[in-house]
Amino acid sequence: MAVDIKNLNHNQLNDLISKAQLRQTELRKEKVVKLREKVHALIKAEGYSFEDIFGGARKPRRSTGAVAPKYRNPANPEQTWSGRGKRPRWFNDALKAGKKEKDLAI
Image 1: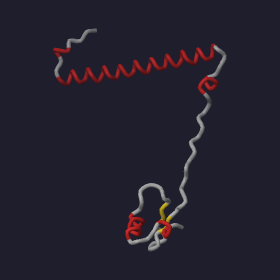
Image 2 (image 1 turned 30 degrees about the horizontal axis):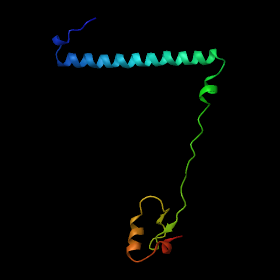
Image 3 (image 1 turned 135 degrees about the vertical axis):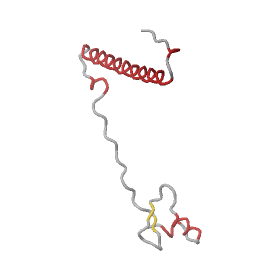
Image 4 (image 1 turned 60 degrees about the vertical axis):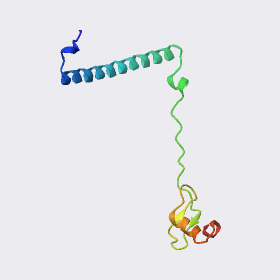
């Protein structure tokens, strides 16, 4: 099925390209499915399970959770900072006003 692309206009050529890309994606997926089936068949033929070879379920990620605040704004006690990340504006302003980090510590 040879297509003479010289006789196609711009829209026809774009349509042909998109169809070819879709077909290429389909072929890749089919190949992956066949390969996966081969791998499972080989593992089964050797007497193992997929989990024996590649491990079972993944370990759940440990959640870091919230970090306790380390510093408090004396002007507004609701504003706190854990000491991680970028310094808040109130913290920098307090340092410029002559306070020390230990003065702001909780």
